[in-house]
Image (tube, rainbow over all chains, first blue to last red; front, side, top):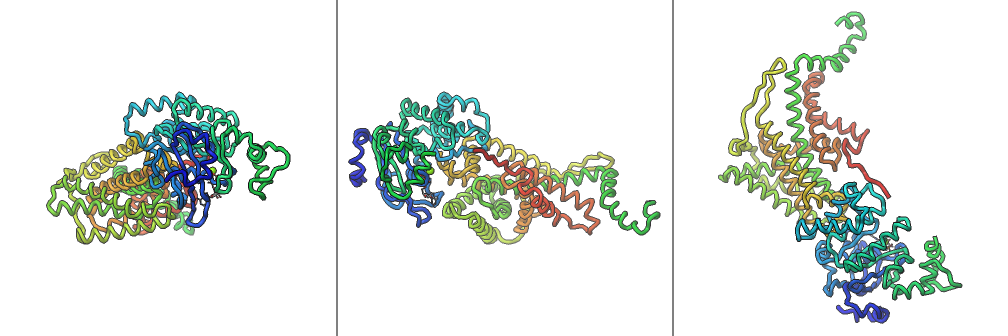
Length: 285
Length: 331
Ligand SMILES: Nc1ncnc2c1ncn2[C@@H]1O[C@H](COP(=O)(O)OP(=O)(O)O)[C@@H](O)[C@H]1O
Ligand SMILES: [Mg+2]
């Protein structure tokens, strides 16, 4: 399927349309437990080598979108019921997560989800599960991960469950890197971390993007941070993309400023009235 | 006993307390050879309990399924081996084929039970293992008949007879087959430990045990891992079946020994491999010691219920078991 099916979004993505797309999500609908409609036609795309932010409040559907792409919905009894997902030009919605990782698309889940009873180094090694290029290559990549995350080298023999939140986030990203990904779906890396640690992690993400050419789709509630590192952003509300554009433009946008960046500029109408106060409160907190 | 003479009213009670708290230890001290013999017997049966519990733990850790069929897998594996041999297949080929059969079983279970039921509540999967149990019983009886069989030991070069030590002021007799069982079981456990800690698949197995979802997210194929753990549990079952079969005979009556695995699991914790081993040994030792020294007080038969009483005490006072997984909670 082609993106022309979703003309509405295509019009708004001039900067992206130029580059080659590594991922495109076309008008997907996701239903949990056969009854709960959570995504109501979400479309987005990521250029090869890009960093794209997927923004939105808690419960907007960011995680669901990422899991739809990586095909991890099944465990939560979720299902993509409409639309298509293309990775490198091929439809992937029927592939297993295993096959997707093999092809180079891997998710770093919300809450890091390191294997707590495995050491940091063992965690990294599990990331190489799908690889077939031999011990030497895997060893070399472990060293590379340690070069990006020196703190992981220090903690290599500790059980991941006993390391700090920041170290676990690094471990989760490092573990994903071990699969030699072309694209990482990164779900809320900033969650529960101190601002300096968040900064440290985002810097590394930028580095990985620049030097390893890994594309990122970055789900975040921390709008401010995400827009500083991403080139493009989508804002999700209630399972729909309500706005998208260049990161620069989004961070200048008055609505975004008010609702997602916590910068009030006089009286504005909400994207969708009613939740105005709650949303503001959450973002200003 | 002069105590009795002085206070006849309390004498019955005192004598009873003496029989419970003093006399058994006096006996142990007086006949250390008998004690050693009892301990050995306990260790051997404890080891077999431990192996059955180990099969449970492997499957429970990796797939979250409480495999009611583990006991019957022991019987089925042993029956396959003996059945093939009786049908004229050379012993070692029969052993290899029995291993293949256990692999096929693992594969079929994954395809026809685990995969279709993935994401269903645990109780449904538990019930499904009842299905597997009765399928194996029915299938086993159709193919191999319902008569008890004799385990082939000589063709597999398993030793016969006993070694007798004249020691401790008496003698201690160790059956060679039990020694062989101890050696092979230890090797198998060591092999599994190395497999778990050093290999790619072993690490993946532990990762799956830690979190199914996270394992999926890094591209570990749960289907592959499940086949491997069920196969590993099948191999453990085959080894258990060979040695248990050599002690009694091979029939579906062996299934009851699987029920002993439950107290072992409660003692050792459902997710701990060391727990299964230590738990098995404790239950085995405890059972034999209690039966030998205290059993006569109640007319014997304590080994039928001793394990369950211990399990009950553990449920009351330490429900996570001796080695229940440390739960790492950290934000
Ligand atoms: N497994 C599930 N079953 C049913 N509803 C779910 C499930 N997972 C998420 N949801 C619902 O889907 C909506 C979107 O959730 P999610 O994608 O986690 O949002 P976000 O990541 O943006 O916070 C929420 O309303 C949530 O309650
Ligand atoms: Mg989320």
